[in-house]
Image (cartoon, rainbow, N blue to C red; front, side, top):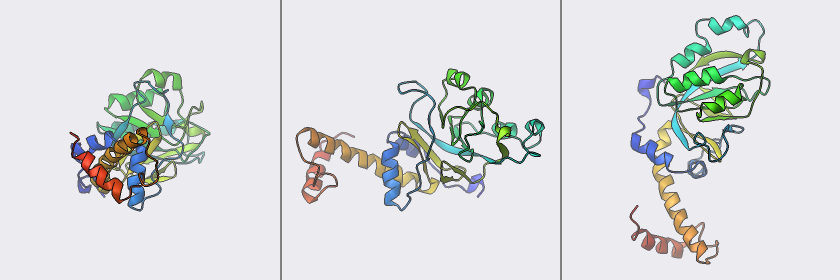
Length: 246
């Protein structure tokens, strides 16, 4: 599917997704039959409370690696046509770079220079199912990065760059170019682009209901019959909702 054929995702949908959590999104996707949406491994490189450890929402710009084959993974490959450097230069502003590192722990696909260039290109962040290198310098960029940690060797020590804007697997999850990525302290999930609008709307409503549940819990109500709700709870919720401004 070429980019012009992708279903539109409105700024309002992206804003709604940015207001809800990955936990909420995973539940909404589960209700729609999608269980494999949470990426195993990637977590924020920055500690809680750091400005770069913030909720991240945007379209996926995919990058793919293959297992190492020594005649392909060479220092000379860095300057060949169609290299990782060309992929980064093709990055449109406002996208999240999602790297299929094959969950490798033997090497790092990106370092501080490449991350700095992604930042300069207007990327929103990086998600990778492997480690990064030069992590002290990467952290100094104050740029959102979700990965599996640190590794000193470069990518050609264990992987071969294979292409960009192709279907990939990252953290055990299938990701298509243009899918919507959402990251927070619970990790990273992918929202199929065609489901983004309905997941966003249903997620906002789910979290509104959960705010009501929290208030009832604080007032001493038991969870049973409240979450999930029985008919009495649903009637009470609808009455409460009528009093709310949001």
